[in-house]
Image 1 (cartoon, protein in one colour):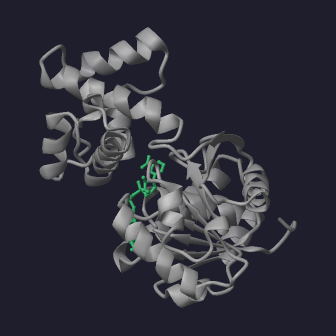
Image 2 (image 1 turned 90 degrees about the vertical axis):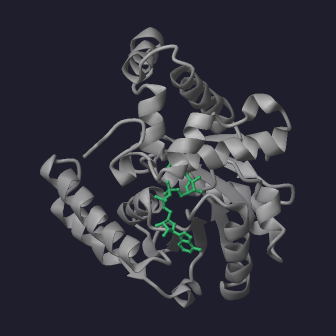
Length: 285
Ligand code: NAD
């Protein structure tokens, strides 16, 4: 990547997309942020402003750098604004059909040299790429939550991702100050292949009455030195996202041990999606 003023488009202004847009703006890029829901876009814009003010008040970012970042960040309800983006990072709902439709639309809209990156937690990059006429320029760029804080980006090569595109995205991740790991394109990649079955098992422990939610989380925090317990972490990630990933693991790996726990399914059915809804395994109201 050139050193300055490249344009990054971020699609989806939820917890991940807003964090990615903030990180890209603070890292010196021009950023367009889009969400199909105008309320979500408004919340993303306000959330980024508040996060930057907090960084300034803690002395972690200068006032000037914060103002510069905000000046480089533009929110838009019109995908046409992505025409000149160099890299587009998709962070919309974890649904293969919805992501494929978006990739197909973007392919027709953005410039031929643009790279289409997906922040998917588990969906096949190869299949997303198949919705475009540029599979060599489609790649997985899996940020961790929250993107401005977590040190890791997992890069996933689809079957046809070119080495040039891989190198550019690796350089971009490093410019964001992240450590890169590389995964081949299998369900859940590295991190969620291991993390989600553990979270699902924690739901089974709760479901079958092994222990209380508090004791399950305390057990894993103090017993295995995890900073958050698995149920607390599931609420942080979003129970809908966890359920979608388990379904991808089940379908892609074809083994019933990846079946989502009925309690996880029931919470999602009830709209108990975790912190973002104020209630999940725990209540945040
Ligand atoms: P979220 O529900 O907080 O945000 C998703 C946003 O996408 C919403 O604001 C929604 O309005 C928007 N959206 C949905 N369809 C759209 C479309 N067609 N066009 C434009 N915007 C659309 O979800 P999230 O937690 O930010 O997850 C987003 C992606 O990031 C998913 O693929 C998820 O698997 C992945 N991810 C999530 C986490 C996590 O911890 N939550 C971590 C890494 C990756």
